[in-house]
Amino acid sequence: MSPDGSIIFTDSTTDGVFSISLSGEVREIIHGDPKLRFADFSVHPLDSNWILAVQEDHRGADVLNTLVAIDSQAKTIHPISQRADFYSHPRFSYDGKRICWMHWNHPDMPWMGSELFVAEWKNGESVEGRYISGKPKFVSVCHRISSALSLTDLRMLKLGLERFTWEGKYSHCCAMVGF
Image (cartoon, rainbow, N blue to C red; front, side, top):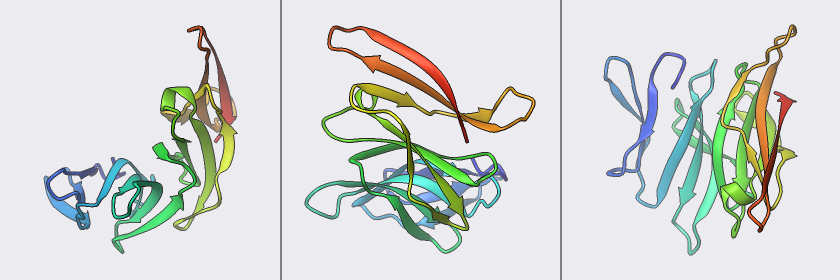
């Protein structure tokens, strides 16, 4: 949801990206292409022209997943990361100065080998992501960003880790990473 209450969505009929306002007005952001799909939107908290998304590209022989930033005013798509096979949970920090996301590679699944990355965000551009946690057989979970419960009121990234073993044993811990 954007700061003005609009919701960003895509539909399976056109594969376009749209915004719907509280009054019900629908605005096209990205014209649909049957070979491009978008999901998992996050709108910048201060500049609602910027939207993070996961893009799935079926135009080539192999499917390419990319973490992208969409400029809704210019109606353009800007790649942020293409280093992984799969992406999820792209999010802006509350102050809009950083982004985070999860990614993993085949044959791993998100519950067995995802990694968490954080990057600086400035004027529509992202600096190369910084690895925070995760590795094969571990799970990094970054589903939400919230205010820390501290006197300094730092913005923090909630991070949970789980360790999977083939014997079916799990261990977990929680950590707070400055965000």
